Image 1 (cartoon, rainbow, N blue to C red):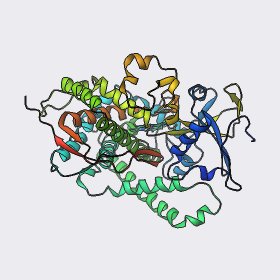
Image 2 (tube, helix red, strand yellow):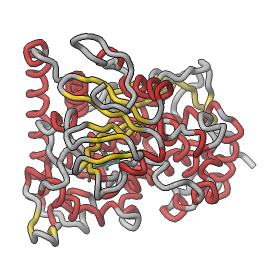
Image 3 (cartoon, rainbow, N blue to C red):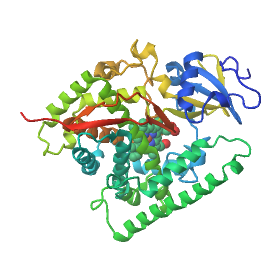
Image 4 (cartoon, rainbow, N blue to C red):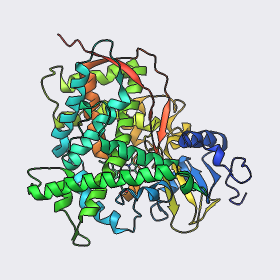
Length: 462
Ligand code: HEM
């Protein structure tokens, strides 16, 4: 055991622990091993050992930015062929610092007001679709939530309508992006991989060219139109106008293109997974649903012709708790990579070398009974009541990553998710006609698979 005293599961000759971790369920498999071996263990993976950390005490150490930083080794590095921006860059690269400095204010809580009308536009498309269904039609929740989050980022990000509610499948851009992400996840750094995946990799090159051209056209069109922030208050306008105060420089068109692609990669499946898990937990916990709906009725009222305002959305405290609780049990970006800035020791006894790859496993972290109590594995939004949240130890809840490399889109995602869930509860009864049993699908992010419900317009006559 070269990493002694860090525990590790038995390994096989040649492949090490590669087979302990399934390629279609790495996060859940790592969680299972954590339940057996504890809050730190290591896996012998091709090319390097991987240290998986999930105990609250050790995660708290990993969150010390003087000692640890984000690592881009593996999937993120491979994604750079499609886009090399905020999400896939190392912290010392200008492709991180420039867009970070320019965009931070545009993702602040205050900035959310500007996106509210666009978020509402798309949320109304979702509820309009659901209102027109027949009593015996099924809703594929994850599909419709993905349509919503994609269309929302397309519109708030760069004024483009993917119009996912007007298509059978998705826009060709989305197919190209999803294939690219799948290929990135399928690669495991094995010898001869490039040869074995020749067809897939050639498709990936085509897909990337397609995504690049489309976003480049959108940027060119915007520049030629001369529209400014007042005319188009979206992220593209902010990126075209913004100056990085540190370097005094603006973003060039390649950087802007890569940011647009990364907003979609980082933001659409994570947010749609959140909305899908939240819907799942509500349908399975009728008393929570009743409380959530009572809040919606008291804040938004039952007059469906009155459009929710930005201020109302911010008053929906219990809906926020429901969403946080869903993110606790199933953080939709369930594991992120870290690295030590220097060789160091954590937990007073585990040596971590600079070259080691560390996985911070949020899903396993969020299930610790010492932090969340005996009902740690149950859905209970009281885990995020004001008092309970204040009493949490530092860094016990990490669905959005850490420090300066934490999610820039977290307020955006929460704003959109609160608005959508509230509008759904205001208008519909949710029917679990098939008694859905949760099956989690992994593709860098996690989401419920095959989650079908029925929706019935609510009787709100008083
Ligand atoms: C980064 C989670 C929504 C854009 C991250 C990270 C996490 C995360 C865990 C850190 C990744 C790492 O350390 O490798 C989530 C979740 C979301 C969500 C759970 C929804 C529930 C969004 C949205 C956007 C977005 C809506 C864009 C509009 C980004 C970007 C980064 C990031 C650009 C990289 C930030 C940086 O490194 O400076 N997200 N995200 N995310 N997210 Fe999100």
